[in-house]
Image (tube, rainbow, N blue to C red; front, side):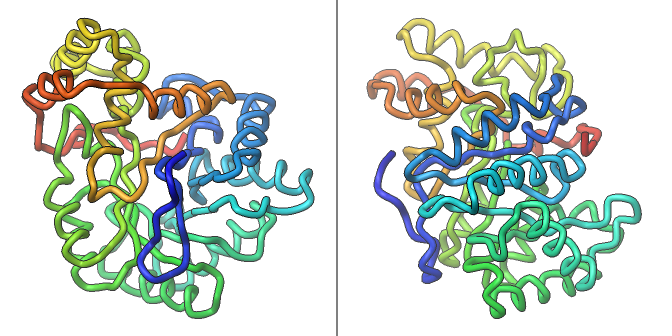
Length: 317
């Protein structure tokens, strides 16, 4: 992978590609397929073997299974591998929606225990839009910054979906990084104003889900778009990308990944994987030669700016 890039002044440096691990937590409601433990552990072992790896997880991915499965491999290795970047997230109480300072602290305690580590590189506040009270979230954010002061995280960030929730928080707090997902892709640019705000404030942008929940990697035949069953209207933009790529012999997944990687505002692109072989495929796509004439055609395609997950029924499994 390319040279690592810094997260502000924190000293954390990340490669151009990070790997998301929500799928290894076995979330069939989200992805349309399950992932058993053996497959998940094999994937984690392959990720942790990367010399410049970057893993992104969360307390609520698969109701804790993602972190627990990562932790099993970490313990078998005798500890977290040197040089691999670890990011996780503070999450609300999944039963009550509570997301105050005490819940944020408990979330981190649960994460550290599950992962088998005593600190993380990057710690994000996750999905505040699903908290029982957005006002309560201010306490969780303040607690996040205390965790950084205590040395439990080297960098702190904000990871969410709705940009109308993220932008006020981004203006009010000095986050080091932020994650947007599904909202800056070849077919949707909903996060454009958010990314611009982050650039203005010196916040590192981590762009996750460049494949729109798998549609641009697996193809329109996958039948899903941004973690939900897709209508033909949702899939039509994906088919247009596929048509351009087919004419030029370019995998749509390579174009979708490089669309994010070639933007100078994006510090790193986070791609979900649930099989060891997908890691090598991702790196191959990152290096796939795509000519400027192909980009001209792809960037001339129409794209949406609305929230692609507006109709999604959010489930944690």
